[in-house]
Length: 295
Length: 248
Image 1 (cartoon, rainbow over the protein chains, first blue to last red):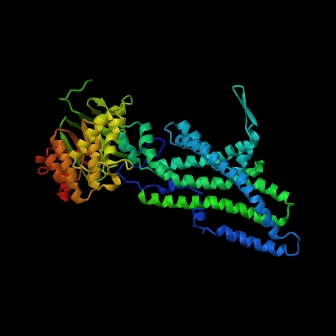
Image 2: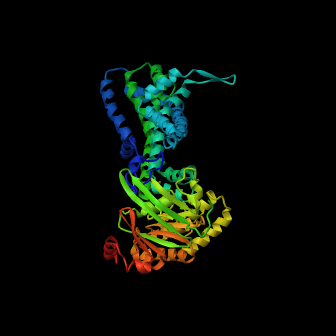
Image 3: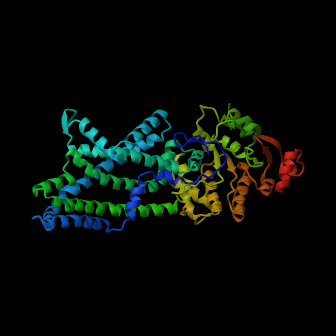
C-alpha cells in the first residue's frame, strides 16, 4: 500500500494487498476495564457491601453505636450526598469529557497531519498526558493555574472545581487523541486512494470520507473513557472540591466519626458509581459487538 | 506545450520506479492515442499495477516521464487534482465509500470536487447507474451489493467525473466467475463508445476481444507488444510464449 502522509508508515511494497481492519488500533488499553465491569452481574456491589458489613456487625456488638444507627445516619444524609455530592461528580465528568473530547479530537487530527512539526507536537502532548498519573496532573493544574484571570480588564475567577475539570480533561484529551488517530488509521489506505483518484483534496478526503467512517468506531472507546473519567472524579476530593467523597467525610464528621459509619457511607458511594457506570459499560460492550459485526 | 488530439493522450518514456532497493519498473515506454483501448498483461509482480497507478500520480516515479494530454504527471508544480479530474481509476477491491449509498458514491465527487449543480449531477448519476445496469440499486449501500455490482458502481463513480482516460486495475480479479462477465460487458460498452481505456487484466479472452493493443510486461519491462490479432498467435519472446502457454 502507498503511503498517506501522516496516516501510515511507508509500505515495503506497492502490490495490491487488502489490509485487514486494524481492530486493535480502535480499542487501545483501558478497554479491558470496561469489559470487566460489563461482565459483572448487576448485584455485585450489593454483595460487596453486605460482605463488608459482616465485620462491623461483629465488631460493634458491644459498642453503644450500632450499625443500625450508622444506616440511620446514612438514610438522613443520602439525599444530600446524592444531589449535592454525586451529581456534582457527574457534572465534573460531563464538563471534563466535553473539553477533553474537543481538544482530544483536535490533537488526534494533529497526530495525522501532513505537517511534520504539528504531527510531532501533537504526538508529544498526547504521550505526555496519557502517561502521567491523573492525580499529578490534577495537582499541577491546581497549583499552576491562578485563582482568577483578567481578560480585557474583566476578572474571571477560576474556582477549584473548574481546575478539577481542566485537570481531568487533560488525560481524557490525550486518550481521545489516540482514539481518533487509531480510528483514522483503521480505515484502509485504499479508501484514501479511491478518493484521491476522484480528485478529492486531502481535507475533503479526511472530512467527507474517512472521518464519517470513524464515528461509529470511535463511539465505544469514547464511552469507555467517559466511564473511566467518571470513576476518577473522586480524585477531586484531594483538591478540596466539594464532591461526593468530600461531603461524605463532612457528613461522617457531623455524625461524630463513628467507625461504623465508614462502610455504609463508602458502600453507598460505591453503589452510586456502579449504578451510573454499569449501564454505560454494558451499552459500550453492546455497541462494540454491534459495530464489530458490521465492519 | 499544448496538447492536440492527434498526439498521444498518455505517453510514457523510460519510466523507472523503485520501492527501496527493489526496482519494479525498469524503463517502460509506450503511447496511447485518444480512443484507444490497451491491455497490460503479465505475470504477478511484473509491475503492471504499479505502472497504471503511476499514470494518475498515486505512485511517484524515480526517472523518466509520464504525460497525460501533454502535461507532465510527476511535475511538482502540476495540480494533481486537475490531473485526476481527467483520469478515472477503478480498483481491484472496488473501494466504494461504505457509508454512502450507490447513488451518493457516484454523486460525491462531481458535487464536492467539480462543484456541479446537485440536481444535474443526480440526473447524470442515475443515468450512469442505469447504464451499468443497476437501476433500483441507487439507495443500496455497498455492503448490500455483490462484488460485481459494487464494481459497476465504482465504474459509474469514475465516469461521473467525465474523465478522458479510464484506468482499470485488475477490476475483475476479486470477482466470482459469474459476475466477471457483467463487469466486462460494461467495460466493453465504454470501449465501443470511444473512451480511452487502459486495463491491467488477466482476462485474456477479453483482452483479445476489446484491446487495440496488448502489452506484455515481465520483471519491470515491456517484453513484447502488438495488436491482439498477432500478439496471441505470433509471440516471439520465449517469456511471452511461456506465459501465454500457461494461460491459454
